[in-house]
Length: 247
Figure 1 (cartoon, rainbow, N blue to C red):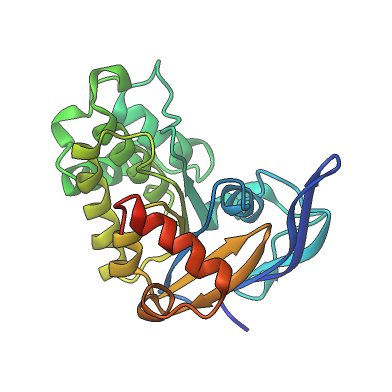
Figure 2 (cartoon, helix red, strand yellow):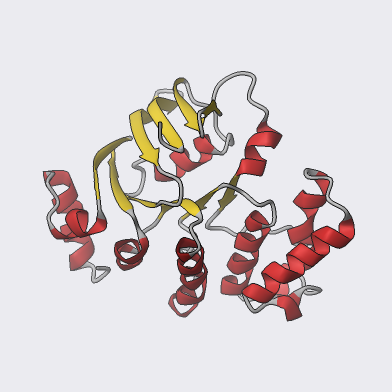
């Protein structure tokens, strides 16, 4: 069994079926990139893995344990699975340090000194230790997103979900965020990320999955997906990306 197993997952909102029997596996230390057109279910799938959305049928398992359906301890799940959103979602009334230490203090019951030491170590790693006392509105978008990643890492997750984390950023700020993801990938962090950054996916992914209409339409190593896709839908999507100058 893979580290993360998604089996025949269905998710709908009223009459709108977003995930239509999605199957996906992620091995430990893999970086798996989800690509596909807007509305194909990438973000919804990530939110279902983290328990932010409930699924109607199917099963999601992490390291052999079911993490979907009734009876799941969501606090325990979110200690294992971190998520970073495209809109940063930092608490605006809290300093950077407070944002990063809040969950370790409240959920892990970590002593404050230890939580702050871990937070400062992580902030130093991304070059933002000097911003520990600043508030989110005093940071650039790229800095806020880097803090959001550090906030997720402060919980020591075994799996990190990244949902279009560069889509809200100005182009010149994208690289500083992607560099952190490169470093995490090099260190063996298991990651599942939805992205429109095709060049980045080609560079860092162990596996690329093309989602279309709520299912994984094609998957494979990046050199195969980007160089010789087998499915017509995948080829059409990548052709449109190339025409837009994004690959």
